[in-house]
Image (cartoon, rainbow, N blue to C red; front, side):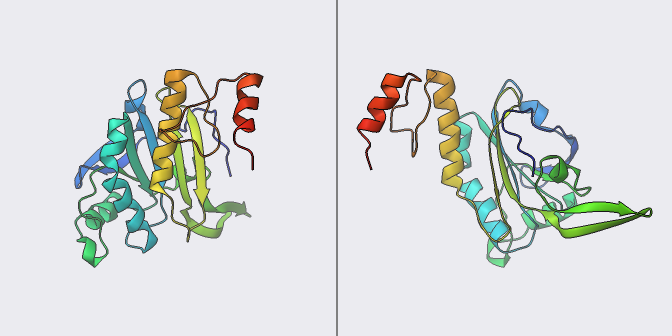
Length: 211
């Protein structure tokens, strides 16, 4: 697995579906540099079981991310046509109709490889290519700041769905730090104050949060 925190997010330019059903070519996260943070997340496959619960959950909180100048972008190894079909399928039939944020098609699996979330590995032996593992993406999530740098990442195994509220909390933490210059202690949320990075402040915090 790649640890991308503190590094520039890998670049890509691929097909995507936006606005719930429009095809676009050469979709890239570069459009957000200098403008918005990005929550870029991977899921294994269209038309599966846990995946629609996550995609719909992100849609339900999309306005909250947008209020925080943060774009939400999804990606899987499916084609743009599969994305389109899933977006046109009613939710009571296993679809995700109503999802409007971009869905990137990583049919070549190169984005998943570059982000370190492909659930397996290719190898070449005697000019024959083989794959060991599962040729889909783990449930990776990357918070990318306005400079295009990864500030947070989390990668779940295939059966383990993510918390959209936690992704939103991390956006709040990043924005709070950038606006106030303070750091965010354990279990911080937007209703709490931060910490200045002095020994006295940290000692005071620990002293009032024993056990």
